[in-house]
Amino acid sequence: MTLPTVTPQDIRSALLLRWEIALLDIRQEAEFATGHPLFAANMAAGRITLEAELRLPRKDVPIVLCDNGEGLVGAASAQFRALGYDNVRALAGGLEGWRSAGYELFQDVNSYAKAFGELVEARRHTPSLSADEVASLIAAKANIAILDVRRFDEYATMNIPGSVSVPGAELVLRAGHAAPDPDTTIIVNCAGRTRSIIGTQSLINAGLPNKVRALRNGTIGWTLARHNLEHGADRRGGVGPFDGASDNARDVAYRAGVRRIGASELAALRQEAHRTLYRFDVREADEYAAGHLAGFRHYAGGQLVQEIDMAAPVRGARIVLTDDRSIRADMTASWLAQMGWEVYVLDGGYDGSLEVGPPQVLPKGDPAHRYRRPYEGTDVAEQAMQAYLEWEYGLVDQLRRDGTHGFYVI
Image (tube, rainbow, N blue to C red; front, side, top):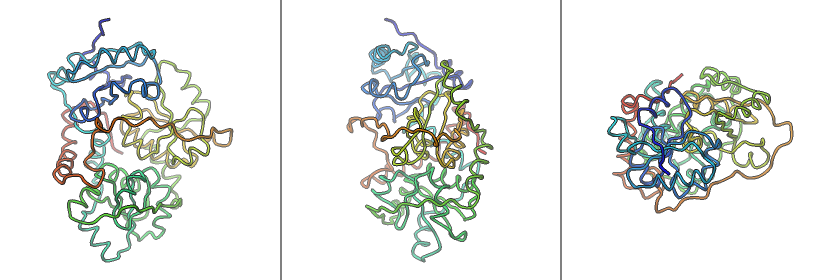
């Protein structure tokens, strides 16, 4: 069977018009990270049967497969057809066809979320402090609170001394507990740049009374400045929103264009079989396991913003978020809306029957084919870390050249 093709120009048009499309790069993650279109999502050919039905919930969604001339597309399309996907095509000419059309290729993983983070900093002038400035504040025992917005396992591997784990979407919910004194300066850090920029700007957008600063370049910048990291820390930030946090988070979501819906509107969205609908519970994993709404997949809010290409590879789809406290869903939705998604927050629902059980977790891939992030672990070469930062610094210009992103910043 000859697989139909779609041109790079047609894909670009679909992206600009916000039509649904799943542009899937089926190479291994390490190869994907060497260069791909901005809105391509990685689904390695060997993982299609594991991942497709979770990540592509609508069987007739337009799927476009690409590789870099390795000859993977034919067998991959057969796997999709065997799973019931009936609208599968190939990118004409593969990645070389994309290059030949004059279009941009983006390196690394989660590239468009990282590019968006750089755009936020450029547009909002998100304030930051250097590693040396933060180290001086720590040494002087200044009135500061350092909040680490990465996943807890990342934090436990290595962290800024004295910092507390408050994963991204939890910030507005927990900042009042972490820094009850409005004179305390809050410093937000991640491993590199994106999550600390988004976290810092989240607190600013939500009207936290404290001064808030990002640790510029995160643990990478800290390491390059020759400061020591802690290992094995287990400090977690408690729940304690600041005054007005809930109303402020809702206002931020409204300003970003997020719509709030109830059960009847959610049912109406589900009935529209011609549209892809993603439903995510953005709370912590233990809260989800204790009781969640049927049909909602767990994806902690901060990671959802960072990994939206992994969670929702159908660009142009709809997203509904839920959270029993609302704050996390509102803040997460505000960022997804600015990234060009049609996103809703579901009101209520937790007073009825809930499903109980842990989040669904996809099996990890072969480590030999995994892209080693330059910001993870404790044995990364300094040259790789510096190169990663320089790549991030260039993303705003690359977005401008690409021209398909449709991002805006409130």
